[in-house]
Length: 298
Image (cartoon, rainbow, N blue to C red):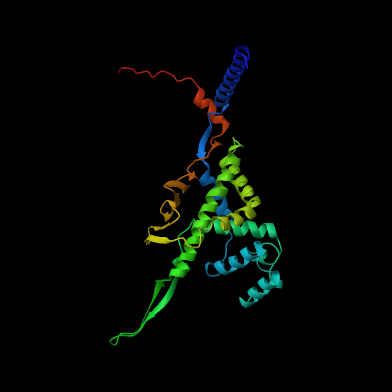
């Protein structure tokens, strides 16, 4: 390549870069003043929480276990019907729509996957239920004192529960970040519109999300250390570098020292959305000329 050709190529590159800089400048100038940059995480999280199913607290876990098994194709409808009968519920009597139990009997596979995914995603966004990994232990009567019953941590149940929580938190970060990137391509919506679209995207990605949980399960030989468990905080770390914390700020997952989920971040990034936060009628109030302050002596 001779010097003349090299100069021509360099000139073309410089012109292209100048045009790109102009494009970026025009884009920032054209952005309405009523748009604000809002982290995507709270918007997406709110959308998923609204999608989470409502069951009686005592029956939520077993019902959702059946629903998620249906969504993953791990059980057949006949098995679910038998389970419902054990709970005193006739499958034929459950309405196909409008009941919290409808998805257990109506064969709506997309709905089953979406509801299961929303339930699992929000399971790490609320106070930890210690009953998941504790068993009742009865101390025998001693010195005339009656026997006492208490709860004690079961190491096998604890390892299983913590591995699932870590996998769900990681899957949340993965799929929520994917949704956040897509929402960034749709600037100028209201918070409500972003929330609605986040819910729709999560519904479409529900099978992907359920598969992601399986992929994010730590190796079987992973070690866990419970750092704190009280009314204020639940914190544990894993030998694969994850630190899971649930407290007053909600869920915070750290991976290699980076905030992977929480504090407005996903995988260490905020993924800000350009939100139409105020009505367009507010913009003239911002662009009106500022009148000079005048003072008058009494």
